[in-house]
Image (cartoon, rainbow, N blue to C red; front, top):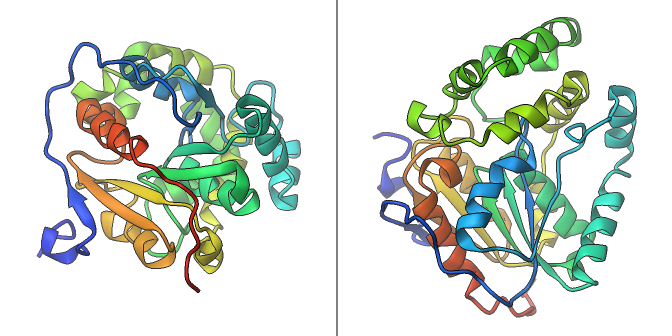
Length: 293
């Protein structure tokens, strides 16, 4: 039986069929504001096509630590060790929303960060949508040469800047690099603005964020996160396997899953299906309610 066989999934894992993306979806108006977080080695530009097609105007983009412009590796390492980096994120969210609770939408490592934000400031988070999100770092995730290099200070510090320059040099090299996690036709849809933004990021600062992600384990505190949570899981995700993502259902009091076609980036691989899942989630009430202990 394959790891993505439906018989292995819990009953509250809902499967969605695929469809062709329309040229434009009807705008979404009203409702709680949204905050989008991209994954490791990505910038917020990855979310732009989806937000434009869905007509999502009331939204904020937040980059992961080390992924913003003019960040240095030493400061990122220090902030990640102290945990203080969450507070500026929460201040930006509160300023953006006027103190209203927001929907957090996090991809991959951005989903892990969303869990930390929801636990730190429960009154500021209305719900979570986690896409291809890990709940631990090294433990029971696929181990590959990339993760080994990332976590090794000597090899990573020397090799990542070189791979960074080569992978971002041209549109063609960028798409070839993306095919490690995306089908070629989907890689062609990734905005070139993300490549241009990454050219101005510090690869060592991003590597320090990656090392931090590999050391995390959010499972011990997830029972404290009472907000409703939707896990959007690509059936063929090889970066964070579906069975790993379904741990959310066991640890979070109000979690459910939707299985969608594709791999680690369903928002880019199958944008119509993903936007339909997100629209359906945002249409729900998500009113705060007590959860029995």
